[in-house]
Length: 258
Length: 258
Image (spheres, helix red, strand yellow):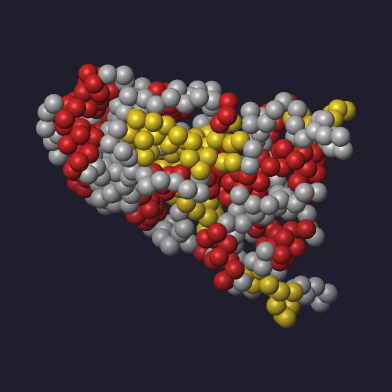
C-alpha cells in the first residue's frame, strides 16, 4: 500500500480480500560479525513492531509471509520459517487512539465488529540474513525501519516482544537441527568466522575444539588447501560448505551438539 | 456433543461460538515398551482423523486444545504442545458426500458460504502418553478410537496424515531439548527401560554407553542404591528422575545429543 486511498480501501474492504481472525508476523534476524539484530518497523503512530500483515483468501501461508515481508520491508529471497502461532484472546486489542487513527484514515467510524477489531491469531515466521548486505525500506505505514539489538528491544505493540523472544528460542533450537550460514558467511571462511556465527546466534560460548569437529564429522564444511592472510603471523585455513551435504541436511535434519 | 440435536445446533450456529477459519488438531502419541502409536478416530462416515475441533471466541489456545481433546477422546492431563499451523488453501475441502452428511444432520441445505465450508487453518498440537494407562473413548462423531502404529497409518481425512508426520518430526526434535519420560516410565526404572523409550520415540539406535552418560551429566536421572530383580543373573540398578532438575530443564531447555 502506497497511498492514503489504498489504506482507506484496505480498512474498509480488507475483509473481502483477507482471512478474518488471522495475521502473519515476520521476525527477521540480522547477523553481522558478533552481532545479532532484529528488524523492527516504527509506525507513524510511534509504535514499534515486526513486519506483519494479513493472509489473502487464495494464498498459501508461505506466499503470504513472503509477500508481507516484501511489501513491508522490501526484503525478498529470505527463507521464512514458521515457528509458532500466537493467539491469546487479548493479544491484539487496539487502543482507542489506534482505533481513532483507523477511523481518521477510513474517514468513517469503525464499528465494534469491524474486521480489524476482531480477535486475531498471528502466525509467526522467522528468517536470518546478513544485515550489512540488505537494505530494508520503510513502507507507507512506517516512519522508519531499523536493525535493533536483540538484547535491547524498545517497547513494542501488542505481543510483538513475545513474538521476537519466541522466534529467538525457535532459531536457537533449530540451529542444532538445520545447517545455517550459507548466506551469512563469505563463500570461503575461517573456523573463527563460523564459530562466531554460531556463538552469536546461540548467545553462548561453544567449545573451540569440539565445534569444528562436529561440523566436519557431519560433512557440512570442508577444509580448503588455501589460507587467509590476516597478518604476518596469522594465516588460518579457509573452509567452505559442502553444498550437497548442506542441502541434504537442510532437507533431512541433523543433530548437532557442541 | 452427545446428541443429534446438539450436532444440528453446532452446524447451524457454530459460527457464533467458534472462530471462523480456525481449528485445532491434537496428535496423541502413545508409548509402551518398544512401541509408538498414535490415537486416531474413525468417524461414522468411515474417515480416520486425529482429534480435532474449533476454538471458542473467548478461549485461550491451550484451553481450546485441552477441551477439544477431552471432548473427543475423554483424555485429560496431557501436556499438549503446539508445533505447527497447517493452512494450504485446499487442505480441508469437504467432499459432496461430507457436505450431504452435514446437511442431513442439520435438516437444511448447506450454503456455499457456510462457516464449515470456509478455508480453515488448523493449529497442530501433540502430546505423548503411556497408552496402556489411559482409556480413550469414542465421541458422538466417532465409531471408534484406536491406537495405530505410526508406521502403518490408514488413509486419513484432509491433510491429517501430514499433520501426524509433522507432529512426529517435531517430537523427535523436541526430545533433544526437553526432558521426557516422567509420565511414561515407572517411578523407578532401569537404564534399558529409559533407553528403549528414547530409541522408540526417535526411531533409531542410540549409543548404549553415551546415552545414560548424557542424562546423568545433565542431572536428569540419578542412580538409586537399589536393584531390580529380573532373574537369577540379572539385577540392573534402578534410576529415577531428579524432579527438580527435570522441571528446570522443562522450563529452560536442554541440549542433548547421544
